[in-house]
Image 1 (spheres, one colour):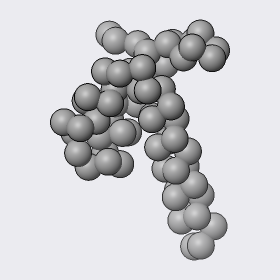
Image 2 (cartoon, helix red, strand yellow):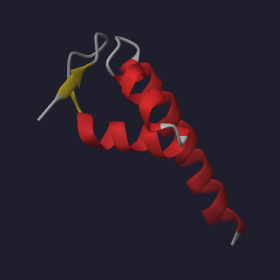
Image 3 (tube, rainbow, N blue to C red):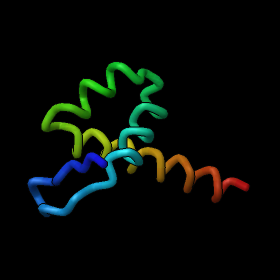
Length: 63
């Protein structure tokens, strides 16, 4: 299993989960594969997961 380490905390991140999240939210799997293979992978996935959480939170508060 692949893991991507954050240079900030040094902790291993769940590769497959972040990869799926980015691919799902970008809706461009190939482009995200390239992003995830770079050093920007952590920030990219982190940004998207925050956006995703905000979207989920808004949906919950509306209903």
